[in-house]
Image 1 (cartoon, helix red, strand yellow):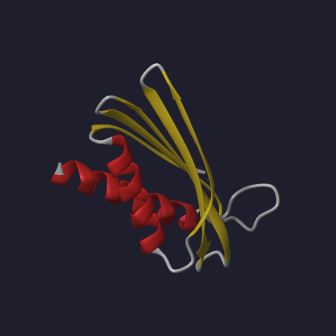
Image 2 (cartoon, helix red, strand yellow):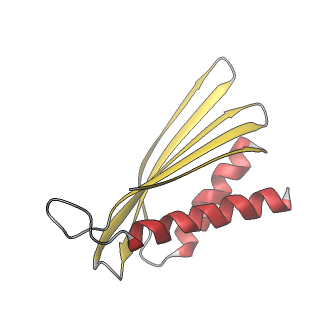
Length: 114
C-alpha cells in the first residue's frame, strides 16, 4: 500500500474533474469502479475508486481517492493497494507506486497552475 496526501486550494468540482480525467486518460487500462459524495455544513467529501492493470505485476491495482473541501480549502488523500502476487507479504509494489505517482503529478501540476 502506498499513500499520498496534500492540502491545497482550489475549486472542489474543478479539481475533482481534473483528477478524474487525468486518471482515466493516464492509462488505457484505467477504469472507474465506483464513488460516493457527501455534504454537510459546508464540507464536501468525494470518494472515488479506480483500478488499472499493472504490466509489471501482471495484475490489477486499485486507487482510492478521497477529496475533502470546505470553501476553497481542499484535502486530498490517495491510497493504492494490490499489485502483489505473494500470499503472506508484498513482494512487488511497483504497480501501486506507479499509480500513486500519477496522482502526485496531477496534484502538483494543479498547484503549479493555480
